[in-house]
Amino acid sequence: MPARRQHRMTHDVRVAAPASAVYALIADPLKWPCLLSPNVHVERLEPDGERERLRIWALMDDRVTSWISWRRLAPGQLRVEFGQERPAPLLHSMTGSWSVRSRGEHDTRLVLDHDFSVVDDRPDSVAWAERVTDRTSRIELAELKSIAERWTVLDELMFSFQESVRVEGPPELVYDFLYRVGDWPQLVPHVTRVDLVEESPGVQRTTVHTQGEAGAHTSRSVRICFPHAGRIVYKETPGRPLPRTHIGEWVVLPDETGVTVLAQHHVLLDEAGIAAVLGEGTSIAQARGHVRQTLRNESLALLALAKRHAEGAIRML
Image 1: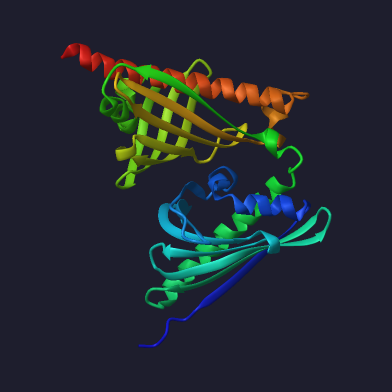
Image 2: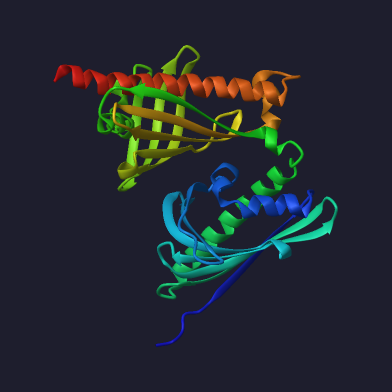
């Protein structure tokens, strides 16, 4: 049987930032969903010796695709090697590397290499892999460049927080409320319509239409659901006008006396959009406070409804 043909693609970008700052963005995969728009969610699996293993969900060709990858970090060389352990559909193999090359104190070249083969060597499959790899690589390099060049304020632009609500009811009912987003028009007063597509079990694409004091609003999200763990992770796609990225997570934690429900938020602010949304002279700290309060109000209102749903069902028994 003839060997499958290997294909190589190389992309690079010049970044006005220190090489160490660029490498730090590459080295932490759990931040990728916040930094890179194609990435939806990343779970770090058990370590595998000198390598780390990751489960990755990403938007590829406007579909949510998942695979397991390994990565080998070489911080001394500012290099990360990777490969797909269980490749995405149509791919037989996918490996590559990120290389960070210093050209000066604030001048870096970031190189992304891919080597891949497709399952059947068909020209249309190769063309699909080249198109998706090229598009995703260009997007990721452009976004990494934009973010890395704000390295002096990045710690201010990125922030996380969480809220919690105590529920005296079954965890299954709380999770069920959060999972059944398609029923929210009947359960959540300000939600007028939900368009829901479940591309595969536990992977949902939603368009939620709401009507509030500020008028009508439409938000689109990808949701990754983990029913056995009581978790739902979601990423708004695209983000809101001020948060460049907003990723949320609901976690249902049962104990002997009830349930604690966490609403976690991870935000990357769009520094250039602060003045347009909140006015000239608004500081990053003020923008953080505004976004945090908005998300806090929304999540607490939704969790209050989940609490009423679960506790009300108990009272009716």
